[in-house]
Image (cartoon, rainbow, N blue to C red; front, side):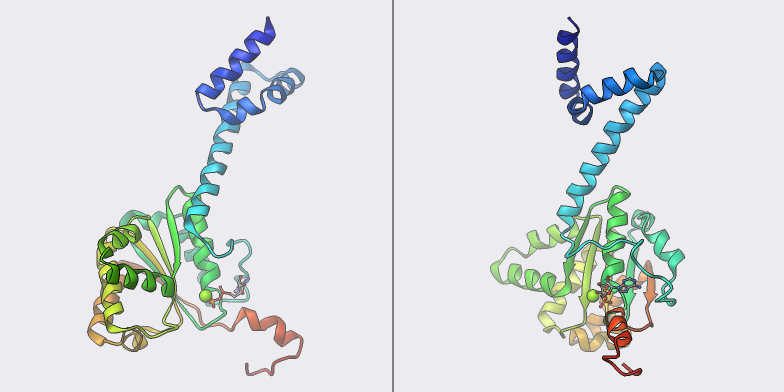
Length: 255
Ligand code: ADP
Ligand code: MG
């Protein structure tokens, strides 16, 4: 008889989509038989287990959708090595609260100082807080926009990049843009302005953006919208990539 009930419980758990508990039903039951929790504690543990499993699955799925090139976390970031990074601000941003007002985050700094690392770690934090994120390099983004424009489906492509709660655009400024491409980028920034946050990393100070976009007016229009509601982090330190090389004596002190 108890086998019948057990089978029915499993089936009901599955129908209620409590799949984790359903899969671990025997373990859950024998654990309870051993520990003899109160009814309330038993129910509490059961529900917590299911919620934890659901949260893990949701995060794993959202991380997949985000297309991070690698995984990086804030725990792995050595704030002591890069004292110009405001750790308190970074941890606040990782909560994703800035998304509520569609504020932007701009990370400036030379190569190797951890801009991409922080962008990914913040994206991960935002996902953990329950928001969707998409990571794209500036090069890939601009190529996609230009291609869509040429092929006549720019509106759909724009809608695609307008959708995620946070759009991370990595490494703007490594290549100067064509004016027409700069204008497509402007349209994306204008579309997300006050509606969806952008997290942008760049090796170029704003004074160089005219060069990057090949047009001072477009650069100013883009900057205006990006900076209006924004948090900026200017990283001034040296490259983390070169740190170990320097230790090994491969590079002189000035590099
Ligand atoms: P950037 O995007 O600024 O060029 P990256 O974020 O790609 O630099 O950093 C280069 C490498 O060094 C990455 O592997 C990154 O994880 C690591 N790194 C950079 N800064 C730090 C840091 N402060 N602590 C730990 N690892 C770091
Ligand atoms: Mg980078």
